[in-house]
Length: 147
Image 1 (cartoon, helix red, strand yellow):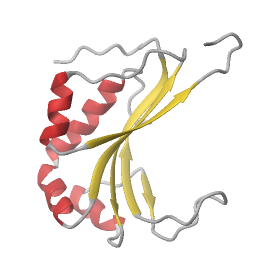
Image 2 (spheres, rainbow, N blue to C red):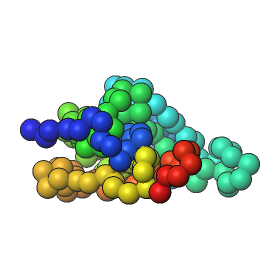
Image 3 (tube, rainbow, N blue to C red):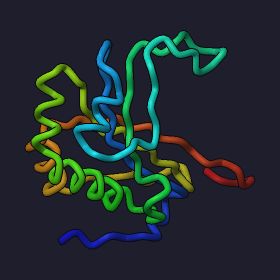
Image 4 (cartoon, rainbow, N blue to C red):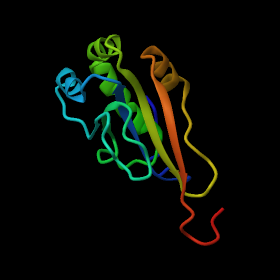
């Protein structure tokens, strides 16, 4: 069992998501497979920012953002991997229909050094379910004198 550091000192906030994307299939299909509503849905062609082109893919995503306050990224990732394990037949069926499935990871540094890490057991779980991690790492320099 993983021992978490919920007050992970080099992190100011973090969360993990399970994301599925497809060029043509509707995100509504994913909700039916999982019998759960997503935290975010994006539809191909949708304009979502005046600074970016219209969305190129359909996207379905759940996240730990409002479920877990821990600053230990591993705890968030374990929650997502537990969801995957409970729904592996649906994951396999969706993947066979061409859905790309991956785990976006948000991690914000509180000090400009240190960072998230993965233990071997977590890496084995990611490999077992053929899941990639996509990291989005930010630096919080809101206080003068930081890093």
